[in-house]
Amino acid sequence: MRKRIDLFTIVNSFFMLGLVFVMLYPFIYMISISLSSEVYVLKNQVFFWPKGFTTRWYEFVLRDSSLLIGYKNTIIYVVAGTLISLVLTSMGAYVLSKRKMMFRRSIMLALIFTILFQGGMIPAYLVAKNLGILDTIWAMVLPGAISTFNVIVMRTFFEGLPEELEDAGRMDGLNDFQLFMRIVVPLSKPVFAAIGLFVAVSIWNDFYKPTIYLRKADLFPLQVILRNLIIAGSMVGGNDAGTLGAAAAADRGGGGNVVVESLKYAAIVFGTLPILVLYPFLQKYFVKGVMIGSVKG
Image 1: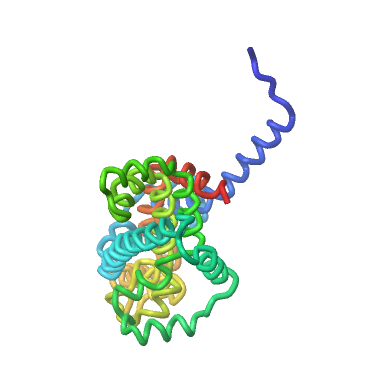
Image 2 (image 1 turned 120 degrees about the vertical axis):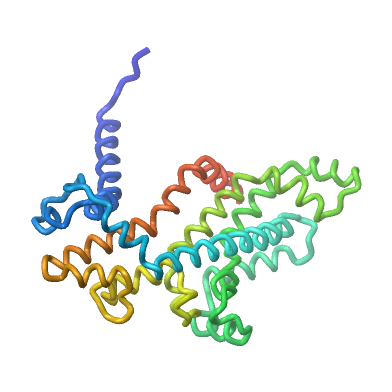
């Protein structure tokens, strides 16, 4: 039986296609500029497809030591921060999912209070300073390791697991920690994947926290280095320009601004690509984990 296509479906489809194009075009444009020759960029002839295809700008990016150091730091922060966040969030959420826990309601109200009212930047900085974690990797992975929203999503997911499974485990002699590790965690892969993706993306894109907690340049993550390159204009020359700045400065006489823009876009694509590649592999867990963990209140 042929399905009838009504006017709403047609209009909605065109609207969604337009929305997708508006969201994707900035990425497409950046990739096209970063893969185009400066001659076509200078003539403003690059709109959708690369013209005068070249990987020259990416070669400059890969030779820049500051970007590679930022890449390494970001990967360390993302891996360590995601693992710490998942461990702390899941264990806290599992405890709060047990109705027999003392002061469960009071603790949940206190957690929800932090969504509405927060201490702010200065108290958070003073706490980090007194803990002695400034200018260390811990300043990037400990503050904000537990999110109230993530705790609520995980707690709701754990409440939906059959209690009979845990009862069977207790009859086999498992304690609470063993029940969590051997029964609850294997059954909770969707919500772990969804929350893990939330945390990983937030750490990967974060440049606000490192600008507050980090002063050593060799600890800067990739986003801070990209921000410095783009906003401060260090790619155009100067003592901190590095390979990218030297490349731009060497070509200033023949459209240096174009070179800078091409290098900026190449650096942005270089820094964004890994987290974009990660999405398709976690999408099935992402949708399932968030929906299951958020439907039941």
